[in-house]
Image (cartoon, rainbow, N blue to C red; front, side, top):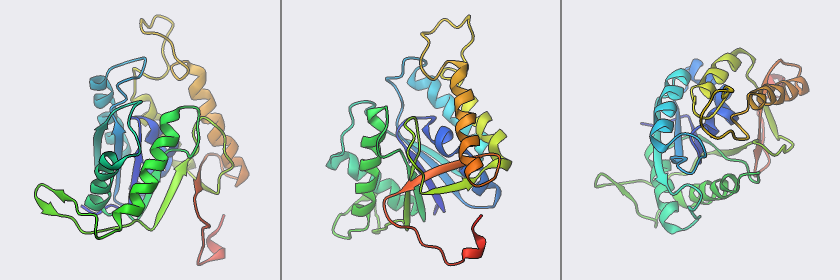
Length: 239
């Protein structure tokens, strides 16, 4: 299956938090969109790998993505090394996405920046024909996406591009709240409270989208960074 857009992020819920609106937008426009989680988020304070897998499946259903996979790299301890690069290369060659979105270049959670570097390096390597990979016994062709973008996550980074998600905010929010073990914990919740389980976290997520939206005079937007200069063919299609 070839994808137009692949969101490849390290923890289940990263894709929804950082790019849920863009995912919903392009699904609605008929694009083929997928999500690959690098880890199961098994080191998270709340929930388990099993509950998060169930939540991720529900979030994927809400967003309407064509595929969601988990590479099951080691949460917290994965490295940007050959074995993990090969797993990411196989996924890139399998789905041949035109665009890949991954984690922030630098962030509060050390997994985010390390995952971003892993995906970036693997995208380059995926285009080298002398790196041979197979899936289910079949040899894969080299492939390199046209564009990679990075999320803006906990640490605010000036975006290089903003995308209007006003019409898709409700879908984004529902996909985030599908992670019932992670967000909007009530006062009677028996699990330890975390930075993201506090209901104020969702308020700040909404405020971030509103702040970015105000920059382009829309209600809600998501922002992304790019490692290279971006070009456009038509200035009249800019907001």
